[in-house]
Amino acid sequence: MTEDRPEREPELTPREVRQWAEFCCWTTLALAPFLYWVNGPAVSTDQFAVRTALVALAAAGAIGLRLFAWRSRGRK
Image (cartoon, rainbow, N blue to C red):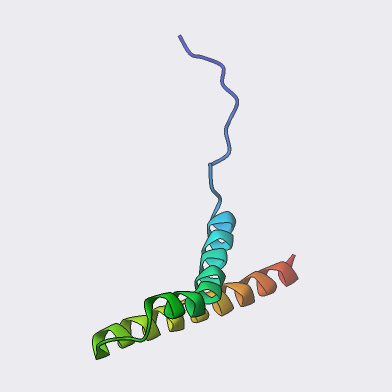
């Protein structure tokens, strides 16, 4: 016995995942100065490296995903 169910769309499309990832990157960049102010200066070179890498990766992700969105929008 089979049930008649309509086809459901996937819960998140790849485009939506990219949009959420871009939002997370921009949010990380926006909150970084506030978090540095709250947490204070880095107390070790390791902590400085991790903070710098986090900001650099967030910036690269935000810019890269924004450029990808602009390029893919132009193709349509």
